[in-house]
Each structure stands twice: as C-alpha cells, then as structure tokens.
Length: 318
Image 1: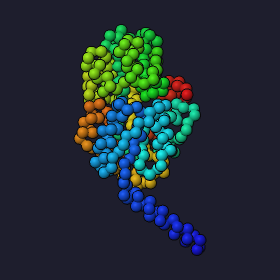
Image 2 (image 1 turned 120 degrees about the horizontal axis):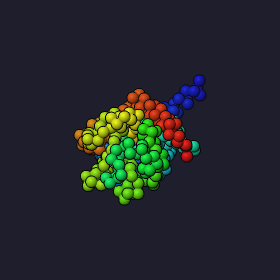
Image 3 (image 1 turned 60 degrees about the vertical axis):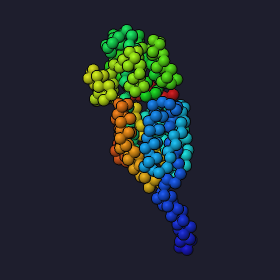
Image 4 (image 1 turned 135 degrees about the horizontal axis):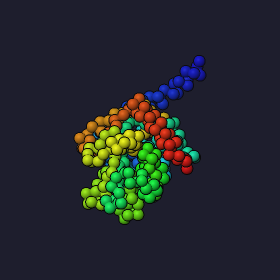
C-alpha cells in the first residue's frame, strides 16, 4: 500500500504538468507539415489557413514543406514527431487512406499512427483537354479505345485514380501516361504530347482563359461554383465518378486530448474567416469542417470507396 501511494505521489507532478501544458497550449510556434512542394495549390491552401490560425491560437503556424513519395515522406515525419500538439500534418487521400491499398511495404499504419482532428476541403479534379484535341466530347474516346492519352502527375496519384475510376465507370480505355508531378504533365498537355488530364480548375484557369485548354466534365453530384457551365459526370451518365481529393488535418497519435480539442476548435474558427471562405470558394473547393464522429465516418467511407476503386480498376500495390 505504501509503495502504491508513493508511486502515485511520484506521478502527480507529471499529471499536473501535463494538464498545465494543455491548458497553456500553445506557448511557442507550431509546425504544420505539408507533404507537397512549395508553390503548389496545397501549399497555398496551408499558408492562407496558417495566417488565420495564428489569430486564433496566438502563435505562428509555420508551414514546413516535406514533399516526396506522393506525400508519404511528410506523413512519416509527422508520425515520428513528438505528440505534444506542436506538429501536425496536412493529411490527404494518399497518406491517410490510399496508403493501405497502394503500397505493399508500409512504414506506418495510418489508422494507428495518426490522429485526424479536423477536416478542411474536398476538391474534385476536372477532366481537361487541349483546345485543339481531335475530340470535343467523351464519346470520341469510347469509340477510339487506346488512342487518347491521359496524363497524370504520377502513378496512383489522385488524378490517376479518378481517371481509372472514370474509365471503369464509362467503359472507356485511354492510355495512361504518368509524369513526375503536375507541372510536367500540364506542359506536355499544352504541347500536344498528351490529350487530356484530370486537374483542378484553379490550376488550369489561365490556360482556359487563353483558349489553350477546355474543361470537359467535373466529378461529384453538382457543378462547381467557379465553373458553372461545365457539366458533371453524373449529368453525362456516369454518376459513379464522384472521386475528389481532400484534406484532413492529423496529429501524431498520443497527443493529449485537451490539446487536440483546442487545436480543433481553433481550426474550425479559422475556417469561418471570410477571406478563407472566399479563397476556397474561388477554387471550387467544398469545405468540410468535420470533427470527431463525423470525421471518422467520412474517413471510413473513403476507405470503402478506395477499396472499390482499386478492385474495379485492377490496380496492383507497388
């Protein structure tokens, strides 16, 4: 009994210190790991949110770009970070869900090593063609199997997966040409090396306005607000093409719940900032301010969807 009491007394300062640190959090800058290169749309998303978060938390939120392996390098850095609330991850389809289905060898278990705490957005990539491509409608690709080349930023990237889903749903076979990044893929699309690509409206908008590219269709149940004249795949008879890239924030597993709750609250408040809302609306993104149970349900449904895509498209894990 005395030994047990002594042990509890020894643990008491740790409990009190833990509670105090959660109550005072944050007392120094927070690192936000973005597992993509600087200058891209994901990086820009994080930076506008980081500015809004600073006002809510009273501390700077520093964006740290850790690109590589389709966002897995950055995810690994977050998994190995100290679970004290001072490092969190820009989670995505790849590092939170797809990782389980697309890679044979995995360095972490997304469902055990990471703790999702708040949703951010869903952004469906749109089907984009060269303005001078030899077709203006999707039936052309169906009538000419294998003759249309579809580019992607890389094997098993989100645009590649939605392309596979579309081809499976529509019974269309195009030749997939993977690139090392969205930039080179878009460059070759403009040069006429490839015919179509799935990309985001905000990325290709300058080329569309210049008459070099045109949008053919968008995934999802409704048209995007920033390109209201572009039909959905559902309108064209392919309702199963509802895949979109998404962003969900995650902390290392083991982060104290009071800190998780405080960061989640601040993130939700930042998403209500008028400048933030306008920025994402201009991109055609749908904000998903999900927390706890709703966030868990969303990720669960995404796992089901991903498993179906891999099965239907016959994608083999790397």
